[in-house]
Image 1 (cartoon, rainbow, N blue to C red):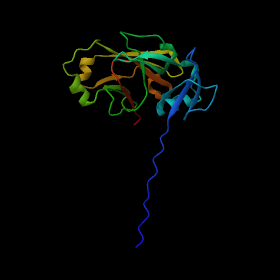
Image 2: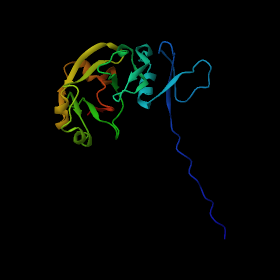
Image 3: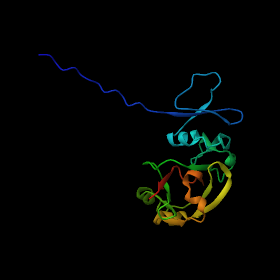
Length: 204
């Protein structure tokens, strides 16, 4: 009897994305979907697929982005790609965070852009709400800055959300300008109070 050959499935390839930068200035020098074997491009940080796609857009001016040291909520320093306009800004050791990626199981605060209802919707997963219920917040307002994607110095509006209210229910904030209806041309930046933020885009 001839035994059937054992077939081992090939592992699914994992795409990884990187930003190369100048160590002295923080300026971005290259984008790559893999590590480069080069004497010119040496220093790098790994970034998400979503951020890589945004930075690769020909409409994006890479000058407005920079690799800089930031401080996480647990006060651990790390290198991240951030808007140049927010380099060096900090509030109680919390750096700014660009809300860009889709929510995951680790997401603590969700920002939804709803073109259907012309609202910003701020929410938290129920598990995180339960964990934060009754907790003391270091601030009485969460700040979300709506800026132009290609010019972070252009502030469209600032939205303030009470964290105690957010723990209890979703917060709905109507659009105020036509610019807010063009999600591909704007970005959401927030002070990093929580560890992980997610963005949902609802078109219809």
